[in-house]
Structure formats: C-alpha cells, structure tokens
Image (cartoon, rainbow, N blue to C red; front, side, top):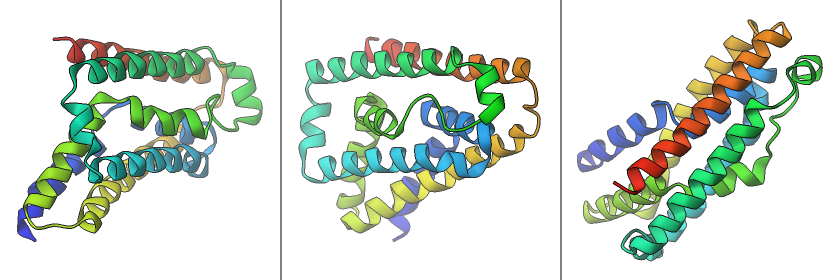
Length: 197
C-alpha cells in the first residue's frame, strides 16, 4: 500500500494547486456560498469518473499515444475553457449580486471539459498505469483520484464561500467575474502553449 503514497501525493498536489476546475468552483461558491459549488463539483467528479473508466478500459493510453487526438483535445479544451472564461467575465455583476445563483455555465459544460483537458488525460492514464503496476486495483485508483479531487475542490469551495462575504457590491462582483474569467482564459492559453511545445 505504501507504493500508492507517491500517487496520492501527486493527486493531492494537482487537486489543490490553481487550475480551471478550482477557479470554476471558487467562482460558484463566491456567488452564493458553499452549496452553490456542489453543481460544478458534481460535474467535475462525473467527468473525472468517465475519464478514469476510459483509462481503465485501456483507451486512455490510445488517446494519449496519438498526437493528432491529443492536439484535437488540446484545441477543443482550450476553446471550451476560453468560452467558459468569457461567460464568467461578461456575466452581469448586478444580476449575480441581486440573486447570486448558479454560474452562467451548467453541469454539462463543466463535466465535458474534463474530457477536453489534455493534462487530465495524461495524468489519469499515467496514474492508472502506476496504480495497476503497484498491485493496486480500480478501487484504489478511483479512491485516490476522486478523494484527492473532493479534498482539493472542497478547499477551493470554502475559500469562495469566505470570499462571498466580501462581494457586496456590483464592482466587487465584476472584479471577481473578470478575474476568474481571465484566469480561465489564461488557463486556455497555457493548454495551447503546453500542448504545442
């Protein structure tokens, strides 16, 4: 079991560090508290589960090993992320202040983004191989990856909920929306950069 600790450490590091999923969860919980983050967290976990199952079936290695498919995923993922960022950056701060409510993007786009993130494909496929080679099972893989994701996303949701107390004016809401939208757009650019180096 100790051979799984490096995989757990890597999964926790990836789950806690800033990235598109964490920015989406932060923005959701900052709009209306922790419970508002449940939809994007559920979407992220759903998409991640699909990706893990694909990898366990052996298809992940085929995807990661095909440069054309990976470039297509990179371009699609970056475009999708830029679209989500644009929607956040241009959302109406008056409306989000008046009724806060959910993000201007829903469950399905966030879940689908998981399948368009080339870094996720590489990480999940590598983790699948590492867990299975160390004698771990599919259960271990799912527990490690989804457990780390739940912890990381919960931390970001808590940060957003704490931030929501500060968001009491349209200008502050606009600043957060534009910051998170900009962060997602920057994430899209880094996807393109890392995918074509």
